[in-house]
Length: 226
Ligand SMILES: [Zn+2]
Image 1 (cartoon, rainbow, N blue to C red):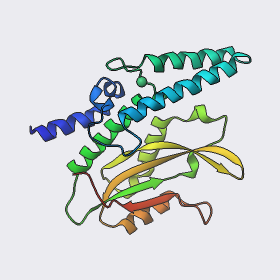
Image 2 (image 1 turned 180 degrees about the horizontal axis):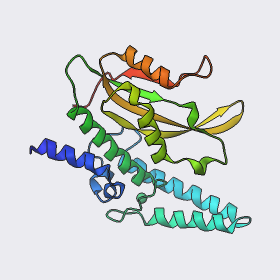
Image 3 (image 1 turned 60 degrees about the vertical axis):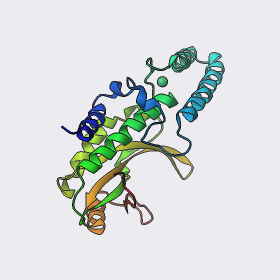
C-alpha cells in the first residue's frame, strides 16, 4: 500500500470514530488542511478564552434564578479550562476541539474526493440542500437527531443514483417574519456530468414552497484539492 493511500485511509477512518480525532494533536496544529484566515491554532485558543469568559458571565447571571443552569455552565467552564494537549476535552463548545474535528473532516473529504476522482467528463460540484421538512421551532431543538436526519437524507437522495457523496449537516438560525427557528441543512460535494440535470433531479426531491425559496444550490467547484 502506498504511503498516500495509507494516509488517506487513516484520514477517512478517523471520521468513523469521533473520539480518535481529539487523540491526535496534529489536528490541533497549523499543519494542512488550512481552514482559511481566522482559523489558526492561535485563533482557536483566543476564542476559547472568550467563550470561557462568556460562560462565566452567564453562570453568574443564572445564579440568582437557576442553580441547575449555573451548575451546568460551571461544569462546561471547568471542562474547557482543563482542555490541553493530549488531554483534550472533546466538547463542541471548545473552539480548539471543534476546529480539530473540522480539520479532520476536511482532510477526510479531500482524501475521498481525490480517491473517487472521475474522468474529465465529470465535474465536482458543491450542493446545498435546505429541506423545509427540517425546520425546528424554538422548544423543539432537543428533538433534532442528526444521525436520523442523515439517514433520512440518504433515503431521499436515492433518485439521484448511486454515487459518492461527502459532506455534513449544518444547523442555521433563521428568522422569518420576526420569528426564529433552526434550519437543518446539508453542504455536500459530489461528481456530476451535468450540473443542470443534477439540479433538476434535486429540485424534484426538495421542492420550493414559495417562489423566492432556493432549497437547492449546485455550484461547480473551481479549484479542488489535489
Ligand atoms: Zn477542548
